[in-house]
Amino acid sequence: MNSEYDVIVVGGGPAGSMAARFAAEKGVSVLLLEKDRDIGYPVRCGEAVSRESIVPFIDIDDRWVAAKIHKFSFYAPDGGVATLEAHMPSLVLERRIFDYELARTAAEAGAHIITRAYVNGLTFDNGTINGVTYEFQGEQISVRGKIVIAADGIESRVGRWAGLQTHSDFRDMESAVQVTAANIPVEQDTLHFYFGQKYAPHGYLWIFPKGNNKANIGLGISGDINKKKSALSYLNDFMLEKYPGAPILSKVSGGVPCQLSLDRISAPGIMLVGDAARHVNPLSGGGIATGMIGGQIAGSIAADAILLNKPEHILSYDKAWHNRIGKRHEIYNKLKEGIYNFSDDHFNNLAITINKVPADQRTLGRLFTAALFNQPSLLLEVAKVFVL
Image (cartoon, rainbow, N blue to C red):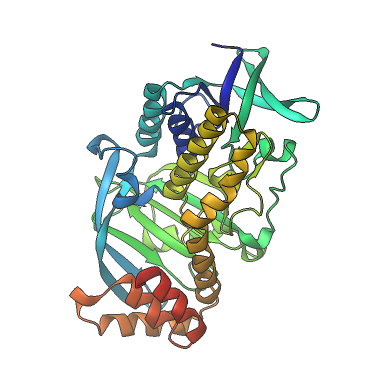
């Protein structure tokens, strides 16, 4: 353990581990601090991700793959079901093992990792960030760092301490709850999505299989809906209707920032990644892959700033993120605003329309095109994502 590092990463999720790894791979010294006892625990995620988004970072290992996905099924409010082949296969992860392995790659690259290290402040030198303070085994410790990367989740206290605006409007914050349950007899190669006012108004409900008839069952609804009826109440109603008596193995809840990235995700001495930067896909609420990409970009830029002795270089991170992912998230956000206001009749008709298409020709692009047929201004956005 050193008293000074080039880069200090706060938070050991996928975004933090990738930031630590890609900085360390360039030869700078890196410290990663994780407040929980174990990397990857507790799991606060549906755990589904496309296979193609993972392979650039780590070789697929069946130890952390709970299910291999080849289909998507969409359930309309009237019971209609439309099933699509997944032209790009997806995975349902075992995040506890997956996150652990991501952290291991950071350690192999040279990053030092300390768990149960509770970061409780930044340190400054003449107004410039020069490190963090944290509590470890009852001791208060201060460590210096030239650059701090905050991967500490949606609340991002580190970002706030640095003076960055990390507040989210409650209308942009999805209220999410999920259980992992046993005795759920669903197709193990399919992701299941329910839409409509009954199950998840202004959002959706998911069933993601995890092998051996286990599944993650959860939903996300907008903050204004949650004020009228809680996400937990919607989930309890669904479980009582569909899977009464199913053993509940775990339960998690929290906020998901389904919005565009923060206006500023870097400032002198500080960078934000993952949920802290709002790197979540605003349409799906998924943040694993995009968090990893954000971590890769931030870690690489931070290392370059150190090696070039140009601290101001980290300010290029905002533009680099926007060019890589941010532009696409702007499109997803427009699609979300169009879809989340659909009536139940619209969802019912959509399932009917999709089922008229031959099974081998059904794609997500066709699904969105059909969904937004009466909103021509959004059809171009669909084309940008799925065609162009």
